[in-house]
Image (tube, rainbow, N blue to C red; front, side):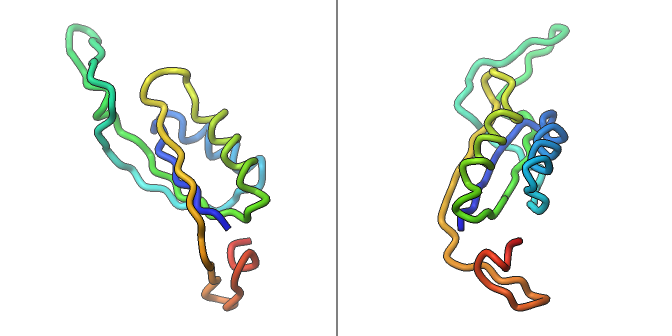
Length: 112
């Protein structure tokens, strides 16, 4: 199993959520976060300078079986992209075990 963590633009969340549901990723957790990125140049809108590194983001955590990883990452890459600086990041790590508390199922059965 793999844990996919994605930091995306808040404005892309509905599109990402819809795309994930279309590939049958129906459960994930998310939080609103603010972070500091690599971009040092701000944008000016109506005479006011805004820092692109402080834009509100959404942080998603998705646990999938190994054979579902590529599909999940590709969906995130396609649906979260605007082609501009600040689109976000995706991190993938191993999950040793997962348990469903209600049924006590473990492994892939615990996440499906």
